[in-house]
Structure formats: C-alpha cells, structure tokens
Length: 513
Image (cartoon, rainbow, N blue to C red):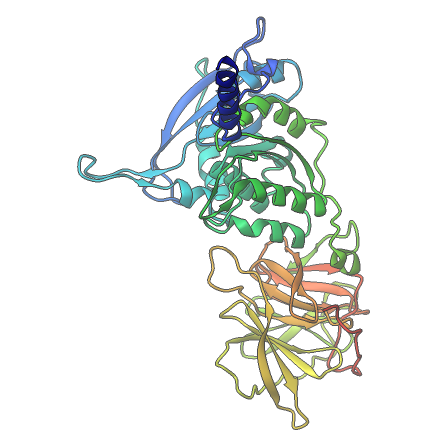
C-alpha cells in the first residue's frame, strides 16, 4: 500500500509538471539583489494624451540605472505589460558587471479607454488591439509618444532623461501578446529597435501574426537579433498552437539568416521560464555592443537570383512637381509622367536628372475582354509577349490575360497573389514589370513584391519609404530597379535584366511547378 501511494504521488507530480502547473528553474544570480551593486531608481507615471490610440489611459514605469549620466544618451529597453522578469534587479546586476550597457528601462501597460460610468460599464481593454495586430501603429506610439514623454521627466535628483535615438542602442521585449507586439515594433522599425526578447510569443491567428513565418522568409532580411522562449505546454486553443508557432518562427528566422537564439522548455503559458532566462536573454541581445547588428543572408533562392549582396537602394532625387509616375525610354532612361499622360524629362543613363532626347508615346490602355471591372493599376507583357499581367489596384490580385492575334486580351484569371498590409483592404498594387526570366515585379504598399511565373510571391523588397508607388527596370542594361516612393526616386542595381515590349520576344525557361 505504501508503494502504491508513492507511485500515485509520483504520477500526480509528473502529471502536474507536464501540464505546466509546477515549474522550477535554476535561479540566475543576476535575478537576485547582490551586495555592493548600485541600485537604480524606478519612476512611475501615467499617460492619457495619445493621438495614435485616442482616448486611452495607461501607466508606465521608468527604470534609471545608478550609473546613468545625462551627458551620454542611454540605451533603451522597452517592455510591454509593465514591469516583468524582475527586470530592474537584472539590469542593476548586468550593468554593474558590464554585461549590458547603461540602459534605461521603459515598462508600458496596454491602454484602456476608461468607462465614463465605472459602476455600470467596463473600460475598453486595448491590449489585443495594440499588441496582436500587424502594422506600425504601436511602434509609432512608442517612438512618437511614449519615449518623448519619458524624456520630459527627471530623476528624483534632477537629472534629465536623455535616450539614444540609435536603433542599435534599443531593445524591446514582452510576453505572449506583448512578445509579438515587441517583434512587430522591431519588424516595422528595425532602424529604431534592433534587439527583441520574445517569451511565449503569440505568433498565432488572433490578428494576423500567424503570417510572420511566411513574411520572414520572403522579406529581405532586416538587421535584428532575437531571443525566443517557449514551452511545450503552452496554449493550444482556437487561434493556434503557441508551442508549434514559436518553433515555426525560429525555423523561419534561421532560414532567413537572422541572429536568433532560443530556450525551449516544458512550461505553460506563464512568465516563470521567461523570468528565469531573462538575464541570459539580455546577455545575448547586448553581446558585442556597440558593434552594430547586421542583416544576415537568406536561403531564399530568389534572393540569390535577383539581389546583389551589399548593394542597397540609392537615393536619386525627388519627383518633379506635378508628376507622379515613372517610365523608361528605349535607351533605359527614366522619365516622369503625370496622370494625364504628360511627360517630363528625367534621369539619363548616368543617373543624373537631365533633358531626355525623346520620350516614348503614351502607352495604350489594354482592352481586357471579359474584364470583371478591375481597377488597373499597371500592366506589362510577359517576356515572350504572349501574356499580359495587370494589377488590380483595388484588391490583392495580379490578373493575367492571353494576348490574342487581334490584339485583345482574353482568358483573364486572378493569377498573382500579393501580400497586403494588415491595415489595408488591398495590396495597393500599381506598376508591374517583368524581367527576361519571367519574374514579375509589382509596386505595392509593402514595397516591391516579386512573383515567379506561376503567380507566387517569392521575394519582398521594401523600399526606404516602404510603399512603392511605381516601379520600372531601367538603366543602360535595364538591370536597375527604379521606384517612386514617398515622392522620391530610388535606384537599386540587380542581377536581372528587364523585359521590354519594344524588344524582340524572349521565351523564358519553364517555371518550377
């Protein structure tokens, strides 16, 4: 009977541990108050003046290390859901041990729209809206509202708070929805946050974060370093499987060449394991600082085929006032055009603004037989000149039509599938061009999306302004990708050569199906 009782106890203990209700982890010494270590100060504030999330009220805390000198802008760590991980004590110890730089911590709670009648009605809880969605709203909230607000404050001894504006000096982190929020902020603004701590991250189908594994593989890599934590007993509910989603994120980041580390465990959806490994995560994220974090090399084959390593966008100048489109001449010169078809001079073969000798005739708008009423943003012929690609500016589709002997276009299909921003109902597609190998380049709200011949987006090239308004392949060899973005012109040399309707048709190789 005694042995049976012990077996039952052992079985119950194992069951509890498997369910994550009983978790024990080694305690990192950096999580404990250490004698002789200078202790930082914690200040508490509220903020209710947001224009990005209007009507919200929230609390935030500012940790200022003892070593902080206002003559030297401090590094920054931003955490969602307020103070977690015993972070102030960890920062005290790691800064003292010089395992991370002098860093001011900003710990922000999600917003609430306070009820006007709290006895009768609930507040509006903004956490999922702010944290789980894709897009740059939360990054703008932190960068344009919270951090400037922090810099208005002073320490108890009167020191001004001065934060570094360099993304290499900034980290951001969180747990669960706060983790995916942190990742999204860095993903949208790698220039502002280069280091990400993600614990039990919610990369599932709540508000679109389940798309990240695909986007990570298709986007040109960004200069980010990420630390992931999760446990096999994390949530598995209507929105997805957290444990599997975090592993999928890790595989995507590794495939795309990111600096990434992780700790997996058996825990459930709580902060116990995250708290235990937080010092380890901070050491990893800040290792080698101030050496800048650089973008890695992706294993995406189309990157190798299209992009030239270490060749980035080159600013060319601004659009001529009154002109909002770009095109190319038979010599590869880039010219400007307005909505009425009027043309102006543009960039010559040397890339300088010049008076061009001759401009091509205004393109004839394609007559699409059986046109379902799409709003044509742009159109181009395939390299063999037997197919016409036409973007639908009101959806996320690129249509394809077969060129008929009489010059009409038939048998239209929603052929190319484009990614759309989380905050838009369409991809914002405008111009479209092809290279001689049959790839299709589309100017969209996410940048230039590159499709293979079968209509699948393989590669997304963000522009310095993110949104690409127009795109051409110009230059003397037609191997320079020009985009109009945010009223400016950018150029980037590629490995490919553009396909032009004024040249002889070229039959590309058969696509991989």
